[in-house]
Image 1 (cartoon, rainbow, N blue to C red):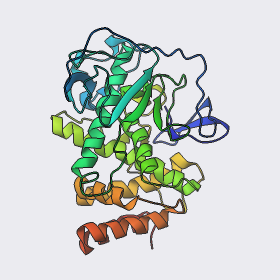
Image 2: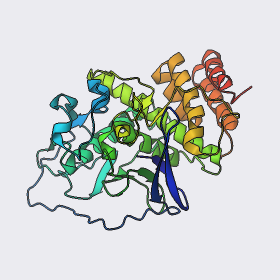
Image 3: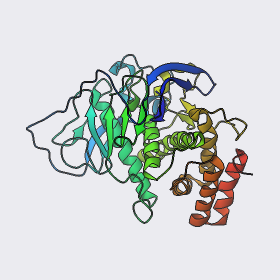
Image 4: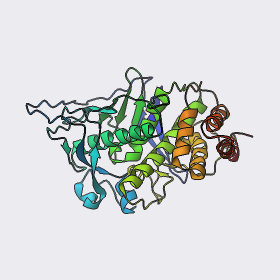
Length: 366
């Protein structure tokens, strides 16, 4: 799985493990439009009437079975239920449902899937990974919880709203081991199904939602550095939200927190721990820039991670989100200065000094 926003040209897909190993997979990326060939979309109609209500129950991974079980030996085994112990599944409350019986609500709309759309007149959505509906439940739950977390930080309450709407999602409709976010011709997230199905890993879902956050903040992708910032933020967002939710549920986190997508990456990395990327690597601006957004984003994600380590998730994430509004798509130093200004405005000089030092340590600010 390579997490990304939609980019132009037909290109090969480069994956980088935390050890720098590059794995190449081919994919077709068209400007603003994703074309999936040979996908058969099925929408389920049912005569049963749902019980209207704001909540339901579903089974999910928190954030993924490698993380919660501390087992780096797990592998996909072609979507086999036997590949993942039952202890990896957690019953959770599905909030903000619209009462239609589908996985639609205030913050997420699972509107299309290869296979049946999950439906329950009692809002009961318990599936296992062999069933296509499982990834639908994962996407609904993790996007909804991410948006509820954003609200808990004041955005959409007293501060400017961020993607405060039903985020459209398509599941298992990208035949490659890849997922992406796009805002043209429609704003949606699409999750692929190669290797470990991408939406089985909450950190893949949260990464793509990180791009949707930037789309909603009038964040411009006008430069390579802007793209790298969004990739770095999306990696960081995956880690911070998965940690917040796991702690709220009392679910153990037994693998390194800075490792992104521990479960999805078992399909394309050899080193242990398995990581799509990490948010704690010792890279510096501008010396370590190489023009590839996923690589360069690791400079930015490390700065955000250091801010979180110093200030805690609530202040760090509030500052980071506030600083990202209306970014004109220029450079890392420009957004770093905006983030420092947000810290000053929100929490005062002491926090601003901490935030500035995190960017100085990466070479982004002087």
